Length: 227
Ligand SMILES: Nc1ncnc2c1ncn2[C@@H]1O[C@H](COP(=O)(O)OP(=O)(O)OP(=O)(O)O)[C@@H](O)[C@H]1O
Ligand SMILES: [Mg+2]
Image (cartoon, rainbow, N blue to C red; front, side, top):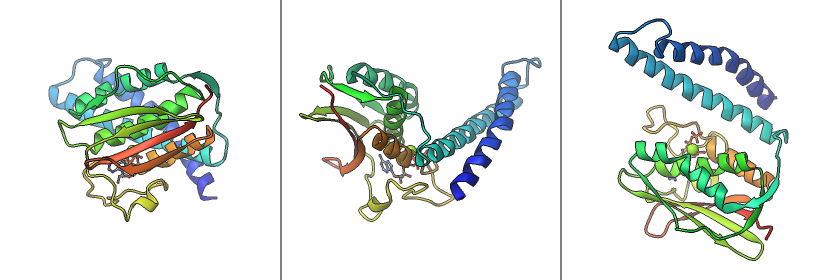
C-alpha cells in the first residue's frame, strides 16, 4: 500500500517536473533572450535542484519496481572489462568536481558475467558516488576486481570516515543514513545502497561491506562468473 502510494505520487510528480526542467533549460539557454547575471545564477540554482528532485523521483520509482519484481532485467553474458571502463569514465566529472581521484589497475582481469549492463552501471555508480561523496578532498577512491572460480568481486574502497558498527545493520535499508538530520552536510536520500543491493540480488549476486584497510569504507559487488 505504502509502496504503491509512493509509486503513484512519484509518477505524477515526474510529468510536471519534466516540463519545469525543460523550461528552465530553455530560459538559461537564452531562448527568451539574454538574462542579467543575477537571474542566470538564480536559474542555475533552480535547474540544479530540479535535477536533484528528478533523480530522487527516479530512485523512488526504481525502488518500487525492484521491490515489486517489475524491473526488467536484460541479462547478457559479456566481458566485465569494457563495462567497468565505461562506468568509471562516466564518473570522471563527479570525481573531478569533488577533487577525488579514481584509481584502478592498468588491466582488468578477463572474466565473463551475465548482467544487465545499465543496471550494473546503476549499482556500481551508487557505490562510486558514495565513496567520492564521503572522501576528504585530495583522497583517492580505488576500484579493484578479484576473480574466483565461480564468482567475481568488484570493490570500491575509500578513505573517508567508514561505517560506524552500530549503523552497519541498517546500511542497505531504504532511506537509512548515518546522518539522517535535516542539517546533514552531504546530499542524498538513503536509497542508493538499497537500490544497488536489490539490483545485484536480481542478477544473482549481492553487495557487501567491510572496513577498508587503513580506515574508510570498502563496498563490494559479488556476481556469479560465467567463464
Ligand atoms: N563510502 C561511504 N562512506 C561513509 N558512509 C557511507 C558510504 N556509503 C554509504 N554510507 C552511509 O550509508 C548511508 C546510505 O547510503 P545510500 O547510498 O543508500 O544513501 P545516500 O548516499 O545518503 O543517498 P542517495 O544514494 O539516495 O543519494 C549514507 O547516508 C552514509 O551514511
Ligand atoms: Mg548514495
